[in-house]
Length: 462
Image (cartoon, rainbow, N blue to C red; front, side):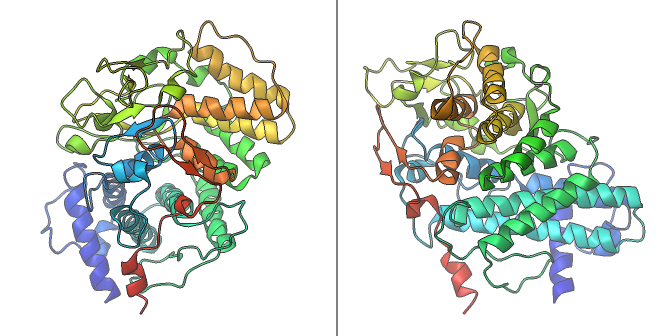
């Protein structure tokens, strides 16, 4: 049964990758009879399988707002206090509705991430068993696969587990390292994070810096994953190391403020490290989040607005101040402010990790390690780069930490749900102020920081 399922999986994935890789196989083969031996019988076949996995990251599964990794990240963005969402796509996330076992958000997130893990496990097994792929290529393929698996497991931990620093000690999702279809038992927080760290550290040791383009994983991307994980875990010495190495240690080299006004639609931008690419023949159409929700100048959803309290945090000379009263709404109206940060087209690329996030992870890590001078230097490197009129900061202590966290929100709003992520990992609540459509006060460690386990998963265990 396992082999049959594996062949079906490979057939489905090959059908996808055939259109995005011209060198999958030299000779045409029937698409309904491609076996693992053929797929992993050459380097080209294995890399095409990997390309298919990367494309699946943008796959739509349930609803328009349940459409790949980018929709998972944008759902986090609207759960904070900086954005305001219409009751249209992601409206339930913004309103904190749908916290039940059959909700689209819970079902999609669980299905999507385990689907990706299953495909990655197929890739690892196929490459390891292949006798046709060189040792060097195996290292690269397995390194990318392990990095992706660690990243997907990290997303499961964020969404379905309690915070690493909390003492709630709820059961964590099951762990799979082989492409099996029978349910494994639930795990513990310790075992789950051990799996994440093990995968990512091994990936970092296997990978080099070369890659096909910014949608693929190299050593820097794996280190960026590690920086995020160690930040979440509060392991600051390891977070600072991986963040610094991921962006190269030269802050100004990876920053280009003039790109901030170009619409965040090209993965070739200097500041982007890892992205989900699109092209005219492989587009998500209106499911291209955050762009299709936040761009109000083109035919799109036009569903996301900006909290007026957040707008006030930006100086007029800050390049990130892309806000405007586009609809000429009165002061205090929840539709008063929109942003021009994102430009929507059907072939827009979607950012997942940008270098400024890593600089700010290093800054926060330095603060927690007691090096406030370094923390100020790093956060100011971002501030002064973005605002020509900004002055170097002199704050210390808890105010310096708040400065770093605010800078993360200002830099990354709409991209990866950084405000919600920080509230969860630091055991803080979320209190919406200003002109919100739905005011809310979410206490620290509130149950709504975790998605409900899908009923279908529970049913599969009966």
